[in-house]
Structure formats: structure tokens, C-alpha cells
Image (cartoon, rainbow, N blue to C red; front, side):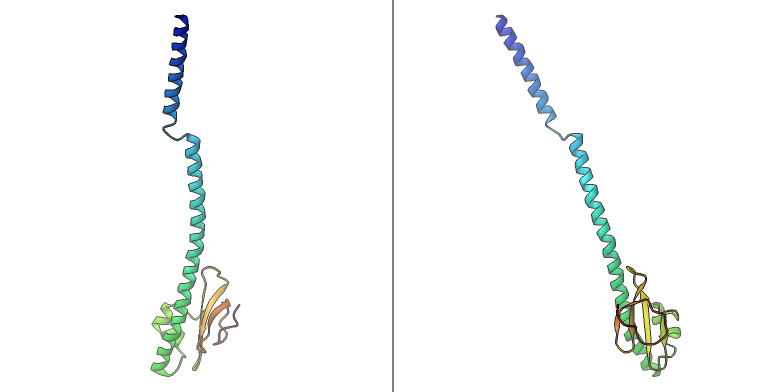
Length: 150
């Protein structure tokens, strides 16, 4: 009889332990949740960093397209007066593209225009009347031809 009572107590303790163990296993521990949150945080930081670089490259591509488009606008301007003389100061489209006297130069038969790049402000994208369109070290407008590519 004593043996049965002791066996019953051991069985009750075992059942209590098993029921507690089963309840604990139904969810995640705090440590597991914190590890997952840390991993998500690290991954999001990496993605945001790479998005910043992609944004700068997209801005550079936009500048390249706008400067290349200035070539067509300059030819339209030339077609109306057969000269490029006032291209940088009177043509509204060129001024809207950023062709200010600081980064645009035009004479009767030639012109050059550059805009600083977003990813490297010390570099610029340059287009000129010879058909060149390339990345250059930020020039000072002294002529009507883009300097050599970098």
C-alpha cells in the first residue's frame, strides 16, 4: 500500500512536469525573439545602405540623360538663329536643365555644358557641340569642348 502511494506521488510529479514542459514549448523564448529581431535589424540596415547607393546612381543617370538632352536642345536653338552665342543665357530649356554661365560656355559655332554628378560632386557629366558626352573632372568653363574623360 505504501509502495502504491509513493508510486502515485511519483506519477503525479511526472505528470505535473510533463504538463509544465508542454506549456513552455507552445511559444518562443524571449532570447529567440530577440535574436530574430536583431537579424531583421541587421538585414534592414544592409538593404537601406545599398538603396542609398542605388539612389545616387539613379540621380547620376538622370543627370546624364538631361545633359545628353541638352545637345538636342542646343541644336534646336542653333536651327533658329544659326548661332550658339546666347545659348547659355537666353534659352529657357537650357537654363531649366541647369545651363548657367558657371557651367555652360557658348560661342558662335560651338558650346559645352556640364553638371556635377550626385555620387561624386568633384566629377561632372559634360556634353559639347562635337557630340562628346562623358564623365569628366569638374571643369571650369574655359572652352567649348569637354575635357578628356577621367
